[in-house]
Image (cartoon, rainbow, N blue to C red):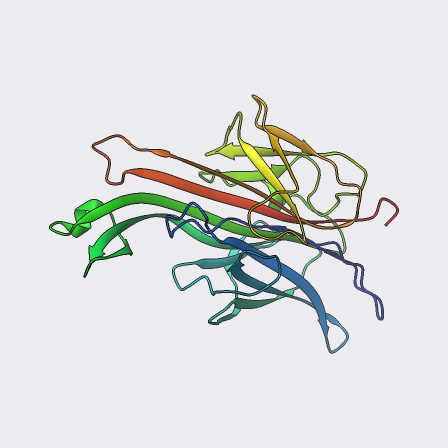
Length: 272
């Protein structure tokens, strides 16, 4: 999202990094999105609000992310702070931040690396936070380590780079171009990394804002450098998503891992 302060009109171009909710252990996990929007207060302050929710359709609040998520804002100065105004609702989380300095901000919703174990309770499967060792004596179905992340990049007046740099997450999607300056009809590159290292042969899925469920409009595979390329001809919002999973050694605290990350970009018209 890009915003230039003007007394009447607003120039918007939103970019949101979004991930897939995977802690349920389901192969049909719900999509997670973090959608930003600028607004003005008293005609002179630039504010940003965002909705964070899960569901199988874009922009349709379904279920709130829960208190185990953390929400952060990284300013143009590179400093990380809590989102000061936050409401955790049943179907969504809503946040607001005031943008005080020109530059690019990074808004994050994170379920950091965390183990979950499915155990039998009264004959039913239930996911609980913790490793196998935390449920000694219980009937354990499976145990996995999860990481999910949703991020939005927003720019006030002029684009900057401090908040756009990689963070070394278990999985992340980074753009070669500034994520608030993607244009329709122009090819753009992204990189998929795992702890800072390129992920080869990693699938990235692209959805239009009208997509439903898990059927991607387009997919691509990363090369040996972790690079994947897309080009869309129509301005609008598009979801880019990628996730990885695997098995851990027999002596690990969990059976395996599932790491997810995705990106919601608003591609602007070529002449905008």
